[in-house]
Amino acid sequence: MPKLGMEPIRRAALVKATIEEIGAQGSLDVTVGQIARRAGMSSALAHHYFGGKEQIFLAAMRHILSTYSAEVRGALSMATDPRSRVEAVIRAGFSTSNFRPEVVAAWLNFYVLAQTSPDAARLLSIYYARLRSNLCHGLRPLVGDRAPEIAGRIGAMIDGLYLRQGLGQGLPSGEGTIGQVVHLLDLELGAAQS
Amino acid sequence: MPKLGMEPIRRAALVKATIEEIGAQGSLDVTVGQIARRAGMSSALAHHYFGGKEQIFLAAMRHILSTYSAEVRGALSMATDPRSRVEAVIRAGFSTSNFRPEVVAAWLNFYVLAQTSPDAARLLSIYYARLRSNLCHGLRPLVGDRAPEIAGRIGAMIDGLYLRQGLGQGLPSGEGTIGQVVHLLDLELGAAQS
DNA sequence: TTGTTTCTTGATTGACGGGTCAATAAAGAT
DNA sequence: ATCTTTATTGACCCGTCAATCAAGAAACAA
Image (cartoon, rainbow over all chains, first blue to last red; front, top):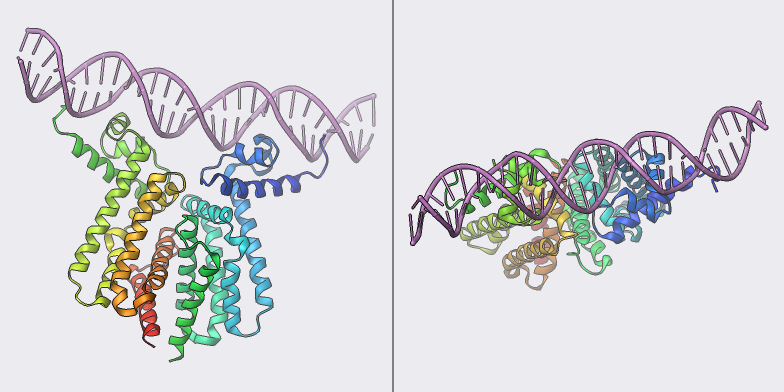
């Protein structure tokens, strides 16, 4: 049965299974055995390819982050004016792929992991820096030096809405969630003009 | 050595030790043994008084929530006009006692617990309902029917800033954090007037 | 004194989970 | 044909941890 060149296939399957398992179980405590079973292999093979549980999680996190980055790039490529740039970043953050319950649950899991794992903390800070940079890039032509603080507030609200969604305390419709952030953007732009 | 009437003393010591241990260790995974050792007793005694690990956590969460409620009541008692009522709620949420790293870490822990424990989820929803109610009560005289959605945005930003603080990605000064939310309040009030 | 209740812990149990290892099997290389 | 590399797993080890239990020690009641 052993086919050659299995490594990338197995790694991708494990990353996919990790995200699915977190979402399916709802819990943030998933075992390597559960992930491996969902991916159709033994837990020993998961260890063979990744070395440990934490590295499996980090690989899943990198996958989510790279997907997110690609979506942001795609959305930005269609934006012409600064205002639509900012909206593109917000919409990408709340895109269906990022907003699926299992991905939100994965984010919560990674938040927890970032408390103890320097690698996870580093990845998270990269995400924050990128988000800030993307928002500032669109905001600076509109509000100048006030861009960083406005970006901070928008980012905080995105995180807060994410959290509530993950806890099942958010609004039922995800579209309304985007509207909340866009509303904040409107307020900030209106205040900066005066 | 056994003194009589130890139960309330032991329970309070365990609640205090639970919060301290979460903050001291930084991690969200604390064991009953660590909590009991910090409280100066054996893990068996902790089980004797609380029955299980989850109930220890829930007791600590209830303590934090009741402290928070008392602070909100105290701050509201000194507010006269609606605007200062809203600010009082915001300031109480970011009071030094709620904003200490160990309390923030405890909140993250309870978020995680709420994913699996119905009791924890119930407590969290009570917190959310109270926060919404407190904010709406102050906002309604100012903005009328728009109070609920504005309260939702303010609450989301509070949560988001909490999250960043817990992850060490927030601003160094907690005072600036309050300013962010007050800034949002100003924007919302200004927009509602027009 | 003789129970009885309250407090307290060391020792133990049982389960779970991450990680390792030897062994097996296929595919290619020499 | 033999050797090496890659793939794969079942079985096992070891540590951790929640929860239990039996027993001891102090205060109190009879």
